[in-house]
Length: 601
Image 1 (cartoon, helix red, strand yellow):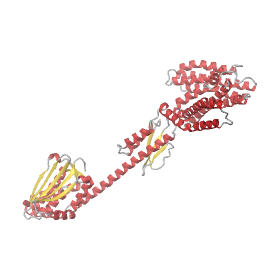
Image 2 (cartoon, one colour; image 1 turned 30 degrees about the vertical axis):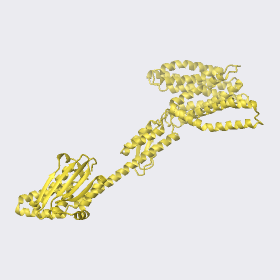
Image 3 (cartoon, one colour; image 1 turned 30 degrees about the horizontal axis):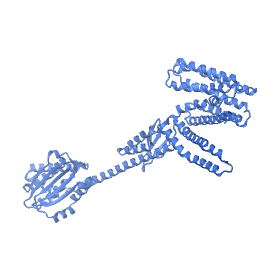
Image 4 (cartoon, helix red, strand yellow; image 1 turned 135 degrees about the vertical axis):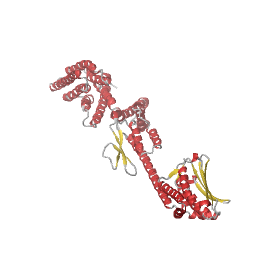
């Protein structure tokens, strides 16, 4: 390929690349809040003017073969001449040391003045038909900004990020100074000289975008550029290795072999582009940006949710999980009853209010949310919503269960045998006449019993409290039955702290008095004992009064409200792990409750 054709191709690719990158900077800066720094916007505009005007000017020269309009060339070089002035302004305007602020201001205004003078020379030369760009203007810009680098280095050497600032200024100075390489009178420079001379502003915009908008540079440009570069490289290799030898032996115009092979190569290149894009995306995400594996991130978040039992904890976990992968400066959540007015809010789609919304702050390094980012947010928000719904449903079921249990307890309290109360009051009345002291003691026992029943607001108590309640009940019954009722209680001290459902033993003792002792002329023994094998607790109530058959026990379990309630409550608390059995055992009737110790009521 002739050298001038290569130079024309270099100009075409170089100016298109520069226009794309400066246009990207323009779009990114334009999306910032109004109060943010606007110097990067001026940089983007100047870079766009230089690359678009340069593309038009050199396109006219290289492809049309005519000289471009002088004012178009002057506009391009004037925009490029202002680039280092704006960069110097951006670096020096934040000078924090008071003693250097005046010096920094002088350098800033001097930079603008020199660039303005160079622009004036450019347009003066264009208006008088002189060579454009003006050699005097280029020399002035070059020597001034080269000299400016020394005080600039001295002013910024102690500042945070001084290396970054110095590199940006150096690239801006190089972008102007390198123009001399391609503007020597009467010389036809090589493509390399043309590249370095006219496209030195491309490294500058690369540095700016990489420092401030790294994610945007990678997402918007590098992925596509890498895929396109790979496609061009493959196309060039196929052209040199296959197409050229093929055309050397076959005539493309009338040989079907040449036409067929060429068509196959074109179609193959078209099919190669999607996998090349995926490969470029993987390289940029994993190697350059070091993005997290979103699939693994979702799986880890899902596993973490299983241990959370509060909606607020779920939202905190969601914010923490998304903050780093999305490079968000801030990630917080709010509670809302409806759609949030915040444009950055992400609604967590729970089935019932109140709903939560995730609010993202600005994304670092020019990061923008792409389709895979949005898919990650949507999936993780859905996982969080499902967990919150599950927590709410569990709480609702627990509350309903608690209310049902409390209702059962209230019903059981209301079912304290009216006959027992009637008999107890008759006994107390009789004792008042015959033994006032015993009457007073019995009344205190009755009061203690009623207080204990009414005080059992919770669905669970300890075995010791339950035994105390039953003891008070039996003391009252002994005042009525006197020597006909014998009581034995054998509950080890180490078992008295075990949690059990409230009012669990009293129905069995009441049943033993009513159907055993009361029906026997000689009365009998009521024994309460408890044992444990470490996993299960056994509570046995035995009575030696009137004998009962299996039919009597079956009929009693069916008609006794207290026993029915006890069965229902044990099933509610323990499922199939607990049981109540009543069996005749020789001269006595035996009632036994078995329940697991590990599961609390």
